[in-house]
Image (cartoon, rainbow, N blue to C red):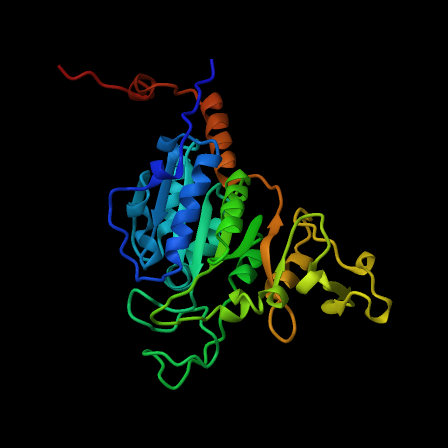
Length: 339
């Protein structure tokens, strides 16, 4: 007999802890979207767990009325993997920032994606270290002046989507903290995916890197700055969907509907489920120089998960093993009786 899951609301996932982020921080919107998404994923409250590392984003488990661990800097993927392997039925969410995930935690980040562990990673990307007061991070733009590099950083920034594609990731989405409704939808899609779901959230730090994503999120420019992807739909954007993306040789190109005989039939159709990552890689790199930033689920493909493989391997060994119990182990081989 299937046990009926209690109908939950967003309020059920709000803890009694005071939320202590800076006023105006994009983290508030992410927290609210998560609390609205969880009642819709069909998982019991006691089967949900949040794992975080270190950073402003990593306070998240305190504000969720679920199980959770606030772990150490960069090591959340290792703990999340252990939690999933110990109890595969859990819905495991890893909360991290661009510094926590891609600097000290970079090695853990790429390997959890490579293994395709069935967890969900939310990477809050504000392109700065917020908790430690404004040093440049692995995603900070070239030339950004910060406390740790007052003359401007000369580090080439990471693109999180690039790393996911390079590690053969099975799910990558990008969303903005200002689109609350769409964020909730993508969070639900991430949970439904079997494997590592990685969501990059373009999040604003109002204190140390304010308006870093404004060219993308500003209501007056976002129509031209965002390409909101939908599987099976043409890649159209701009006011009235008058612009689109086509493939020209090995590169993407922005075209105008009606210009040079271009029609909607010429526009690329998004295929998030294509196992070949080439087009997905072009999409995650897109942005600037007249190109919009790709928003939404860019890649979602099926592949065996690490946890399923591990569990199956353990079961196979157990079936073949001669030793089935502790007594079998204790009394195997040569034994002595001490009197």
